[in-house]
Structures are given as structure tokens and as C-alpha cells.
Length: 294
Length: 320
Image (cartoon, rainbow over all chains, first blue to last red; front, side, top):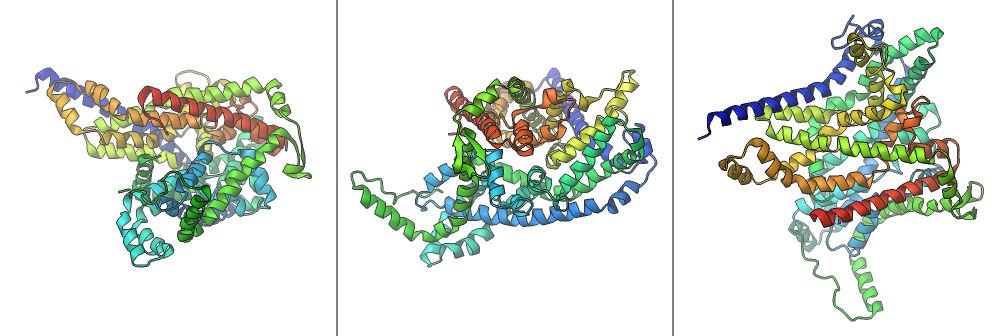
């Protein structure tokens, strides 16, 4: 039997663990709650520092301002187009690479995997890639955002691992004996068995596209091509530089920018946050598969 | 599960041409697999190996009109120019210190979080803790930096509100060089600790429960069980993640540094990769910055190889 001091030290330990967990939850949630509260508060109260947890002077003004802001709409539309088409290209290319490379009977497989894995650890870098994309005439077109990143080598390896470890080789051999071609094997047998990994890949790639801004920053010149993140960056940066200058005449403008800052953060993250509870499980699965053999 | 790679020609003395033709036959028999690989291989050649070929401009005076091949060779001129420039040491120090501090401070936190998640007696609470701490990982970097601006604002941010409430004067966090690194690293922790803990949680679940039972019988306290069972059980994962972290040691968080950078904190926020962007892409000094990028990549690769080798010797865990 456990003695009395054992029981109380056990209790103390539990109390400490609970306390730590509670502190972590508060630290993670507080900034998010603050932004949500500030986004629905009276901008003047926010600027005074009056809002710190709960909304003050409830108003949806910021959201209606954003609703009437053309740039935000264009950015939203562009991001949806880039994310959708980029993800389709990602999935097709990654599958076309991962499946053959998962086949033990592919001649030269080790060599190809080596050449592919090498690119994870050493690459040409920003400038040569930029010059290449420029030479290909992709600048200021959607291609510059969806083609240079068509395959993520990490995702390719995760998918290949899944094909290798989760689909019994016997099924594929049986298909071969029945005279099934490799294309039919992939489309009719492998892919239907691979829905979990396909879901993971769609999510990884789609969130990546949704959140990315740097490629658009270097390749997009025309503002009407800007994705949402870049529009967001402009709004955040402009009002910050105005604040640094401390220009009094700009006060109204700053107030407007300040008031929509909080709301636009919410608006731009909303799709990801809405999807999050439903798909969170798949993300974790993806990381776990990746950890089997990275 | 993995079928034996039986029909590989490993039999010894045979003429090269015969082997070549056999390989050719085998490729021909699997031609449709290669057909699938056609686009991906073309993509790797163009977008991964193409830039590697383009790296030669680091040793040339690249002139867009003459093209990569037509430009004049200048040897190591760009490298020496970089090493001799007054900002070389600043760039190197900032790049190394940001990553080193991140490694020292941010790396252990997901391990602690994973242990807390495992030790929580209530399953429900532990699930909540996981789901909440994973969430910030999905917020874009632009939004994170925007939130930092709002949160740390000298006028309206709650942090300065708290400082004022205790009688202090507001601090312009984002415009002071001394604050750049602490803010950069702590916001990284806020965003990524949950996500990075997943691997450790998976490893902890994989530890044989009988080990804990046996330790309990021997009267080991829970702290002792963590120290003697949990931690040793996840050492291989720790080593692998450490190697991977060092594998992009010189590149961590470049986009975020760029977004947080301004003229007031440049002393602390100027790193090699942002310098390559501002000088290369914005000012068009392609050859010079390609050389700097190459210097960065070589150091990175050297670090990775070194750490990998070290880890293999020390703990028998390594990437390859």
C-alpha cells in the first residue's frame, strides 16, 4: 500500500501539472481573445487602451468597413484562386512522384530518392530561383505562385511512406497478375485506399498557400494580383509607419486603419479557424506518418 | 511488409554493357511508372537543379542581357567583398545569435509541454490543452506580426497597459533593437510549441507501460519516472528533431524577421537571408547576393553534416 506522504505528494504533483496546463492555456488563448474583443469594440476605446479582455462599446463597424473595402475582396478572391489551383497541382504532382517511388520494383529507385532528398538539404537559394522564374516569364502571373513550389519534398516523403507501409504489396501484385496496368492500379486501387493521406496532403498544401505571402511579394507587381496576406501586410505596415511618423493630420486615417486591423486579422484567418476543429485530427496523423521515417 | 528486392542484379563479374541493357529492359518493362515520374522529374530538374546550375552566377558578374552562361567569370570576388564589408559581422552575429538563442530557449519547451500533456490525470483536459496549443500554428506569419504590433502597441496594447498600471513607462517594443530577439523568439514559442510537441507525444505513447508499472512497484515518484523512463524513451526523437532544426539553422523564420524589420531595430534584425532579399531582389545585385546565399547554404550544410556525425557517435541516432 501507498503511505500517506505518497498520496499527498501525488496530489501536489497533480496540482502542479494542472496549474502549469492552465497557465499555458491562458497564455495561448489571451492574445487571440484580445484581438477578437478589440475587433468588435469602439475603435476610440481600443486606441486609449481601454480594451484588455472584454469588448467595450460593442460595434461591428470595423467589419462593415472591411466589407466595403475593395482591396480586401480582391485579395480574398485571389487567395481562393491561388489556393485551389495550387493545391490541385500539388496533389497531382506529389502523387505522381510518390507512387512510383513507393514501388520496390522501380528500377533506379534508390538513386532517384537520393537525388530528391538532397534538394532538402542543399538548394540554389532565393536569387537563382527568382532569376529562373523571371526567365520563364512567370512574373506577375499565377504560375509564379503555383509552379515553383509544386512539390514539397517533405510531403512527398510522407506520402511515399504511407503508400509503402499502409497498402499491402499483395494487393498490387494481385492487380498485376490480373493484367491491371500501373495507371489503373493507381487510380482504381491505390488512391481509394489512400483517402487519409490525401486529406492530410490537401490540408498541408492548402494552409501553406492560404498563409503564404513571400512568393507573391517578390513575383507579383500588379496590386490587383495580390493575395489576401499581401493586402493584409500593406494595411498593417502602412498604419505602423504612420504611427512611427506621428503625423497629426493622419489621425483619422490611422483611426480607420487601427479600427480595421483587428477585424481584418479575424477575417483573413476565419476559414482556417472554422475548418480547424474538423481537420485538426488529420494534421496530427500527417505529422505522425512523417515521423515514421523522415 | 517490404518485399525482398529479389530481382536486382547483384551477381558479380559481368560486362557493363550487359548490365546496362538489362537495366534498360527493366526500365522498359516498368515504362508506365516512369511515365508517371516524367512530370515530377522534369520539375525537379527545372526548379531544384536549375537554380543549382544558376548558382554559378555567384562566381560571375551576372548581366541579364548576356545571360548566365555569357557573363564574365570573376572567381571569389563577390565572396571577398562580402567578407570585407562592414556589415558582414553584424549579419553573421544576428543570424547565428537568433538561431542559437531559439535553439537554447525554444527547443526544450515542446518537450516539457508533451510531458505535461502526458502527466495530466484528466484525458479530457489533456485533449483541450493539445487542441488549444496546436491552434496558433495555423495562423499566418503576417497575422502573427500584425498581432504583435497590436499587442505591444505603446498606446493601446495590453502589455504596455500592464506596465503603466504598475507605474512604468510604456516601451516601444517593436522599435527597439534590444527587444527584437526576445520578441521574435517568444512569439515563435507561442506559435509553435504545441505543434512541435506532437512528435514527443507520439514517442511518449510508444513507451512500454510495463516500465512505468515496474518503477511504481519500486516506489519511484512521478518525477523520477519522468526522469528515468519518459525522457530516455524519447531521446531518439529529441536527437532527430535537434538535427533537423540545425539542418535549417541559418534560415529559421526568415519571412517573420523580414516582416518585423524596420529602420529602428535593423541593428538586431538584419540577418543574412533578409539582406539577400533587400540587396538582391530589391536592388538587383544578383551575383553578389547569390554568393552570400551560397555562403549561407554551405555553412548550413556543414553544420548539418557535423551534427549528424556527432549524434551518430554519441547516441547512435542519426538521419542517415
